[in-house]
Length: 582
Image 1 (cartoon, rainbow, N blue to C red):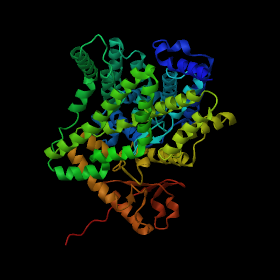
Image 2 (image 1 turned 135 degrees about the vertical axis):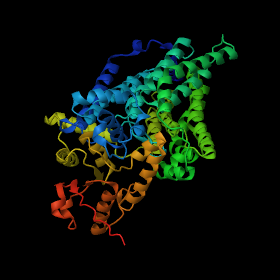
Image 3 (image 1 turned 30 degrees about the horizontal axis):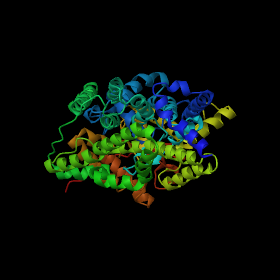
Image 4 (image 1 turned 180 degrees about the horizontal axis):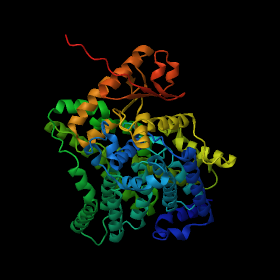
């Protein structure tokens, strides 16, 4: 039995090196079945999200991103808009996604549908990429399939709402996430080869135009992974010079984006640094304290870090064939820690000392890429434990994976909305209701948008929620006078006057709505409505948009209601009473 187990373990152990550069030679009909399943999953997710034949509601960052594109496409429609009237607020960040949306909005009938069209390729490429990556380590297509599916799970990483996994909308970071396993595949195909290293840096440079901070941090981390693998025929000086050249190659390819970013943002010199910091804290919270986010990341993601650390140490002693891979991951992890933890902490201290805003806020968010690498180590260690006992105690593998899931269960967010999309798409397909019908909120928002489009051009709106405000911007192409989300764009663009204006409006709007608690601060309907109207008058809005049925509020004058449904209402703002000078 021991010899049999050893033989089986050897065949598994030889997998990584014996198929370098010939991954396709080990794929079989079971892999083809898995790939077909991935295509079905991605298609069903798209069907589940693409309801009513046109997507109008986008969540959070997707809505803000589409709004920025709408402002570039038709700037004349956004006179009086608190975010889009000033093109400098959105000019600093333009990616390949922006270009795609600008050209695809017409054929797809809107920016929302164009955005969601990328959900299918993103989901499929991520699943296929992680499946192929796992097949470098596992002889079993079933294990590769399980690993690929697990990477879809939405996992909290403890960094101001940052997540790993697939969500409802294919944001820029989701598009990079879908391509991340392919970059790893390229780097690991022959990590000692100079041509492979060059190709990896070229790919990383190109991916800057997909998602800048993910590509930049991962390029540095991958470069550190290569640094840990010095070819035997190279001196350390030669090795260092080659690494320097690879870094320069990445910067050369990324330079157009870098120069465009720098040229479209102010230098960050502030007339009132203390006020700027106060505004920054009000909008970005713990982004101003990277060390706090680092501690929170360690607190939440320790199971993945433990799997990479202790798992890697154990595999080093048992698996000589994986030494190359383990050294690469060690270098990658060290590089990621430097660029995503050390650099932000030091840069924030320097910025505070000089009275400037930090140059970047997002490098620390790249710590989320620890999650898929951690999952990979969990599967490799679990498979090795299973190989130790061969078939006698095969449940050990299942037990190990279940125990790990128990450890990380508090990280996995609920609900898993991507899988909800897949389920919805499957139900619609089986019942023949394609496209899937809109839910109640989507129906009400669709009717709301139709009512808004009938109003005079240039009419300005104050929405109760960001979801409604961003939807009005990108789907109805109408100016909005305040959203919470836009404050982040002003921070990134370092537009101080816009930041101050946003902060003043936020403090006023805080009387009405608590964005952190997502609930009304005023429970009395009369005070709440009168405050809403007063703010609209002060902000210069002609209409207010409620996330509720105005007909059920006795304080609302019926003649002011332009449109009302169960979940949304559009009301005309009465003219402000003139103030009598004393």
